[in-house]
Length: 163
Image 1 (spheres, rainbow, N blue to C red):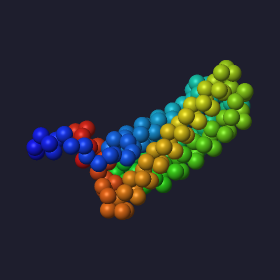
Image 2: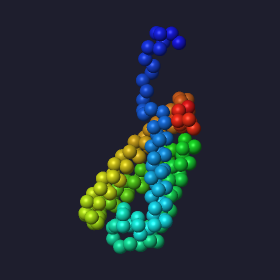
Image 3: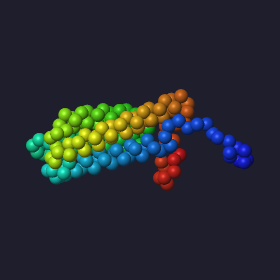
Image 4: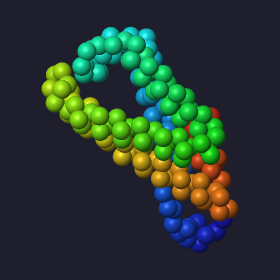
């Protein structure tokens, strides 16, 4: 490569650096699966530490754990199947948005009181991040469909580099 070619700016990149969506999906998958395991294995401990709203019901917490686990597994699958990313992120975004509304309704019922606000704000922030990941995954799908860079090229390799 000549010095001129090396210093000539390349086409402007639109969107995040390659691999960003995959890292975000991996992080949310880990959170969802950790929550599912915590809820299923120790529902009362989860209730006491994270979700002290209303009265304790271990069965319902394990039901919710199954939903969280399913979302986590779908997110993991989407790391290997890029065509799943946008739809799985859409579903996860809707789930977080609805979960946020539920916490907003009960914002003053947390024990201690500040927990209701923290739960709502953290869920709302996560919803915004998920919506952004969904948008970026949709853009990558569109670029792939129009003959742009393949969607799978946004996956990190085993060595940490992006193909």
